[in-house]
Length: 255
Image (cartoon, rainbow, N blue to C red):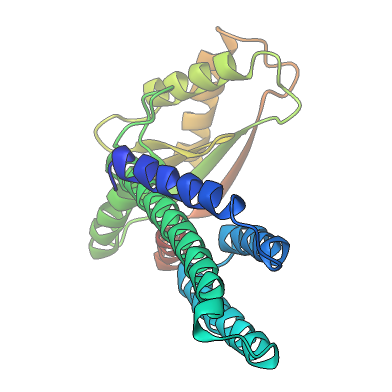
């Protein structure tokens, strides 16, 4: 990312150019200012490449119009010098404006990419100490390869916190995460954070009876800590297979 001093310097140059431009008396000054403001608004929303095309187009078109007006007014070369100077000032202002927006957008994109990369490198979810979704899916991919070789089953369980539970949501989230870690077989099963409201559990080589044992153990441990009468969580399940992993890993890359 660019050093802040460069951005600050460009802003100083921009303000200096604009201040100098405002001191010049010119019939086209209001038109120039309107175009500059409109250009800044466009640069905010458009891609840098498209904004650059607009920049070049504005400089060429305004230069052509000034040349045409000078020709119609039959101005001499000396008389045209103020018009040329003003046009150069306008071109400098919109160019600096484009550079500022280009650098800010590029740095913003790089910052987002760095945060996304850091999130992917992070193994454990901070609040509950379970695996992050990305780490969970990568481990699940390796486990599934082994399960397929041994012709064994893998089961995915989703534990979602009831959206209506809000007043103690953070405390409940932490309690459920810690309880899930205690419930499953630490050397075989996985617990991760699927999203802000849902945990995901992978049970290796299990059947319906094994699943019920895990869920009953989880409910029993959780019931000792919080009141379960208000349906704190909702459980759903899905088979671990290639389709599930491909979908989840693809969605992670797309983000």
